[in-house]
Image (cartoon, rainbow, N blue to C red; front, side, top):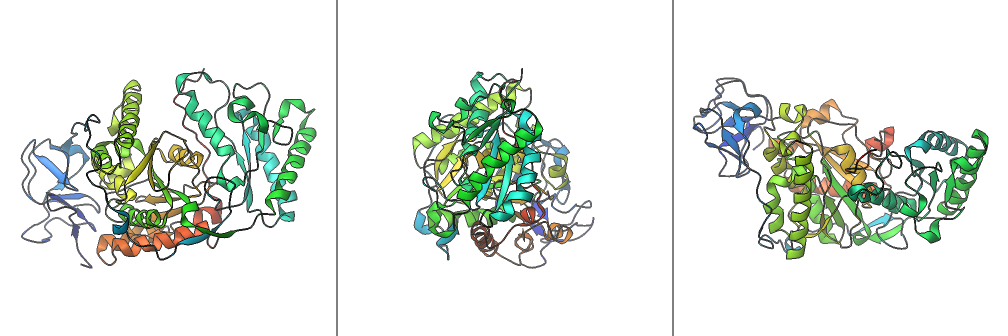
Length: 506
C-alpha cells in the first residue's frame, strides 16, 4: 500500500482523501481521474453526486451537495449543506461494547510514578502555587521566578515550581448558576496529583473567590494560604511567599518515584489544528494506545463537545449503561443550549486551518475526532473540570478550544496529555506534560523538533495503526515515568491556564 495516492475509509464512502496533492488529469484507479488539482488531504469524488445528494466519508453523511458534483471533482467546504445534528433523545446504549479481552494487550503493565494518598498518581513532582484571583498573578509570577533561582536548586528531587494563574476570581457573578464550573476547576487544580498533596494558595484579599469556596475549612491555615493585602509592601510579600514555598519544597523533596500499576495512571486525549488526515492516522493511533491503557487498567479521558456532537449516537452505543448514556445526553443538550444562547451553532467550530487541511465542516471533523477514543466502552461521563470516580475510558465534556479543554482536563486530574495535530501547534501545559502526535509526515519534517511522534506512515500505508499506537503507548509510559520529556517541556512551551467560565462577568 506504500505510495498510495488516495485513502478511502469505509466501503460506503463516495469520497476519498488525497495523500499528496493530485494534479488535474492524474489517473488514480478504476478509471478515476482528477477533474481539478486536488490539494493534499482534500476530498475527491469517487462517483457522480447529484445536486442535494449525500457526500459520505467514514460511512457517515458529511452533508448534501449544493450543486451536482462530477466523478473526480475536488470537494471542499463551500460545496456542502450541513445536515441536522442527531437527536440526543432515546439513544440506544450498550449496542457496541468491546469486551476487555478483545482490546489490544499492553506489553508494559507498570510505570514509575509518585504515589498519592488518594486518587491517581503523579507523573511529576511539582510545587503548585494557585491564585484565587488574576489580581495576584503578577506578584506570584515574579515570586516563582525567584523560587526557581534561589530555592529550587536546593531541592533536586522537585521537578519544578508552577504558578497557576487564571482569569477568574473577581469581577464575576460568583453565585451565578454556572459559576460552579470555574470554581470547581480552581478547587480541583489546587489538589492536582502532580502537586503531591501540598496546598499553597495566594489571594489578594478583596476578591469574590474567597478561600472557603475552593478549600475545606481544615485546609484554610497560615501554612496553606497567603493574602497579599496583609503584607506591607513588595519585600514583605515576597518574603512570605518564599518562606511558605520553602516549607513545601522540603516535604516534596522527600518524594520518590516507585513502580505502580497502570491503574494509578490518568491521562487525557485531545486534538487541535486538525486536518483530514487526523481521523486516518493520528487519532486512530492514539485510540489504539488508549485501548491498550484501558485494558491495562489505566483511565483515559477524551473530550471536546462540538467535536463529538455529530457522532453522539456512536458514543451512546459504547456506554455501558443507561445512566452513562443519560449523562452523555445531558452534557450534549447543555452545550446545545449554550451555543444557541450565544447565537451560533456547532459549525462555528472548524477553523480556517481545519478547512485548509481538508475538513469541510464539523461533521467531518467530529468523525475524525472521535477516533482518538479508541473502541473501549465508556464507563463515565464528566462535567467540565470534574474528577473521575471510575477507571477506564471516560468522556469529559469540555469545550473543543485547545486552551480551554486542556485546563479542564488538568482540573480533572490528568497526569499527562496526548495531543494530536494536523496543522501543527506549539501548545503545552505546565502542570501536565503534553506529547504531540502529528497526522502527516510533512508536519513532522517541518517541525522536526516540536512534534514528538508522526503518524504519517499510517496515511501512506507504510505502518499500521497498531504500529504507531504502540509507539504512542510506549512514549506515554516513558513520559509519565520521567524517562523522557516531550518537546513542549524541553522548551517550556506552556499555555496559560484558561479555565472555562460560562457564567457572567460583571
